[in-house]
Image 1 (cartoon, one colour):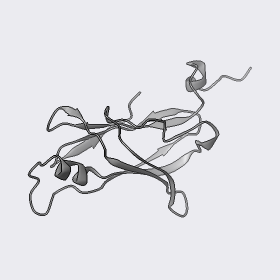
Image 2: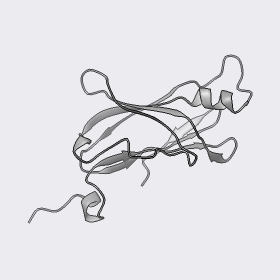
Image 3: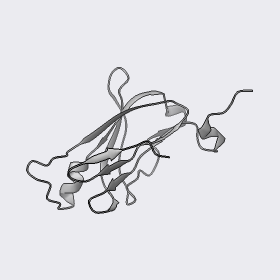
Length: 128
């Protein structure tokens, strides 16, 4: 008997990638932030482009199911434009512009890669 991936055991689609963005300076979700996902195995290729919603999340997973392939990816977040639109004084030039997070995934797991950001710093982790 072959064991199912953990994501399938929980009743979720096999393999998916989600994200959200938290504005740690103001203590709220970061809305209307441009997000791009690239596959960087071999030639860098755009996989998905979207904008964060009012909850700082995307309306749909960035990739899931059969579209989810194992490999190396990059998430780009246009966080500098977000803080500028918020009227936050970020310095000249702004310290952060586009934040890029590079990570690797397996095709049959759920990966949640959040961005926690202020105008001067950011962090990430593998969430659930």
